[in-house]
Amino acid sequence: MVFVHELGHFWTARKFGVKCHEFGFGFPPRICGWRKVNGKRKFFWGNKETSEIESEDTIYSVNWIPLGGFVKIKGEDGENAKESDSFGFQKLWKRVIILSAGVTMNVLLCMLCLMIAFMIGAPQVVDGLDPNAVVEDQKIQIVSVIKDSPAGQAGIEMGDVLLTLNDQPFENVDQVQAYIYEQTDQNVNVKIRRINEEKEFQIVPIILAETEKLGMGVGLADTGIVRYPWYQSIWLGIKATVIMAIQIVVAFATIIKNAFVGDPLGVEIAGPVGIAVMTGQVARMGFIYILQFTALLSLNLAIINFLPIPALDGGRVLFLIVEKIRGKAANQKFEQITHGVGFILLMLLILVVTGRDVMKFKQFFIDLWLKIF
Image (cartoon, rainbow, N blue to C red; front, top):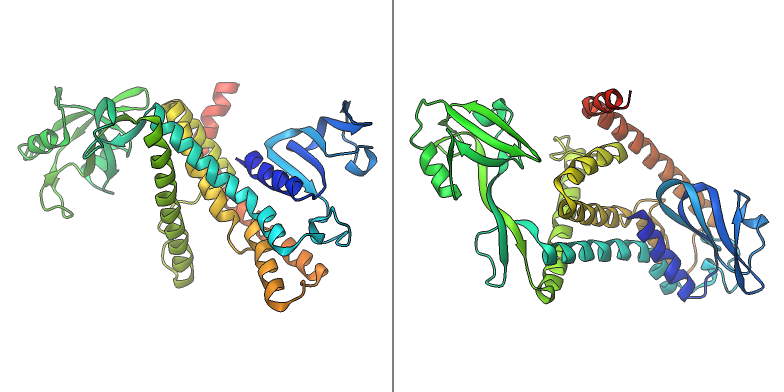
């Protein structure tokens, strides 16, 4: 996702005639690269500074830290503004497009992943589907668990697939609900599937305050793997991206509002460690889930990156908007200091969130350590 983001900056910069010193896969130190000499690309090893490598064009590199990629754009921090191939020399609208291109690529990546998911088949609620939809592997899935309910206390989790109740299978949610309503003060053996493992729980249904009906404390839905024709999948991928973007923006607005008024954030926040653990969990569920998770993360990355926060693309665009209003650019040193402070604050936030992730997923790391050694 980071590589695609940087590719957007690189491609648009080159299209507008801005020189890019280096475009790399992963982060330095550099393993190897390709430079242009006398019109031909030549391979080289080593981690020399870009300025020490003689090249007629962009240096393409592969680096040791496999976390996305980067691009070094000439004049991206305001230097060399009088040279025609510098970022700072370009018209304001061109600079806005170059800065926004990374976010745009992440949105397009989200759309592409969802389009492919709809084409090959993705998990979805099967109620009220389009006539063109093809449904496979239909099942009853737990989509929510009420905290401190019998199901919550027993250990049932959102995403579990309901297999049987007292060894009796069911075809849909209505049948399950009708059966539960008859189990007053009865112990119910609940068998579920979690990823590739089957588990059993003993649960006694109670009258739930939320519904005033007998229940275990779970929300159920009839789901299945649903696929669509390719032409319909394109529209559905675009539509799903827009809906998801609105939901993410609303979630961010809620987080910011709650932070200011002192209310609980209302959502779980994860950093690089948390995302890595969740990616591993998603990967065990199958390729289609990885596609959907990638789409979600890519769209999150796009929206976060375009927030008007110093050091992010949105913060840089904000400076350009101020430049347009004022009729002159902001002081270069002031802008660099502002972005530097913003970067430090973001790194501190990542450290705090990473610490929380390590504590939250500590059992995962203990199990991983035991598996390795």
